[in-house]
Length: 387
Ligand SMILES: *[C@@H]1O[C@H](CO)[C@@H](O)[C@H](O)[C@H]1NC(C)=O
Ligand SMILES: *[C@@H]1O[C@H](CO)[C@@H](O)[C@H](O)[C@H]1NC(C)=O
Ligand SMILES: *[C@@H]1O[C@H](CO)[C@@H](O)[C@H](O)[C@H]1NC(C)=O
Image (cartoon, rainbow, N blue to C red; front, side):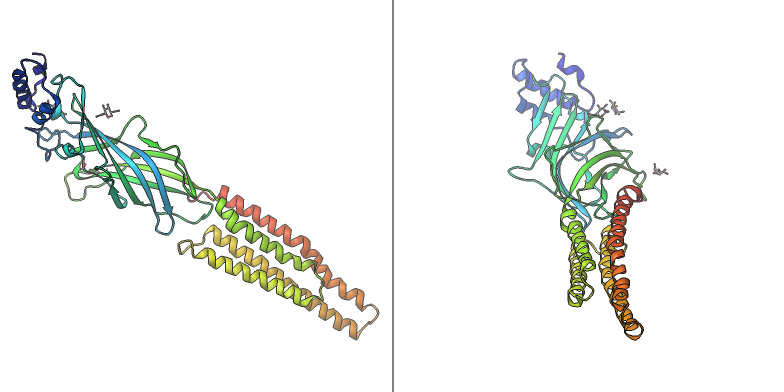
């Protein structure tokens, strides 16, 4: 009987049962249903593979990321939906040649009868399995005892973010996968050699794009236990698309700053026009700053957006002060000309005030352009402090 040859001490009783079944069938192979019943007779799902000898079970892990639903700065986390696939070998479930198939697909109710690794995501805040219409789990059993176990989960994972370069930043979020109860002496996770991470090609994120991902092992100390826990990690780098901020923040503020310069081309005598223009632009910018501040987390350090807003406010404010200066100069000149030389007065009055205006017409745009260039270069190229 070639089928019985693979009978090992562990799975011997099972082989015997199946052999008995086959004798009842007049020597032909057992049906799959009978086989599954026999397979699980002497199997205890509470006990892990390699329990008897001092070796560990290797579990190959791979992920298929279905969608990244959100990355939130407010709560500093990301939500994703993925398939978690684990592959390992359980020698107790070998069935070389016992039935006319090389592998079996088990129903989700049978999965509960088989030992599975106690994988968990360390930095998970909340997670759920999907149960419609049945639990979204799959288990394939191969004749050499290899098991492929896949399930679908939605996970919210903590992702601490550095927002110094916000909104010109990119973020790295990680998933740490560990065993909860088994130390490295009993269970070891490792990333599958080929394609450990696959992503849905149609994946779309409102503000980010997934630039790259990187898998590696991580350290996990066992504390008081006899060994360390197995730990693997996935790091995902996301680039923020600044399109939203260009439209919502940068272009409007640039326009307001440009608007404040209109004042330099107005007559010095147009006091109401120039004052109201100045106050209007300062107020609008302050208002926009307050609006923006409510949609980002209140961190205690300065973000790139804060720098931009503060400098723009500075420019608008300076344009208003410029008029105050021009106005003072004009009045001084008028006083001087009144007391000394009435004939020369008109020429002189226009000179100092207008000169400042003329300089401002050139200096303000140039300095602002310089600031813009510096800002983009510093925040997109130079500052590599935070990835
Ligand atoms: C565990 O013990 C069984 C029975 O002695 C043996 O067949 C198997 O190869 C051992 N496994 C490992 C990984 O050493
Ligand atoms: C896990 O991966 C290793 C290395 O690629 C491979 O040799 C082994 O057969 C895999 N195990 C399973 C159960 O697929
Ligand atoms: C756990 O890991 C630490 C650091 O790698 C190492 O010093 C320690 O010996 C390990 N403990 C065990 C029981 O392997």
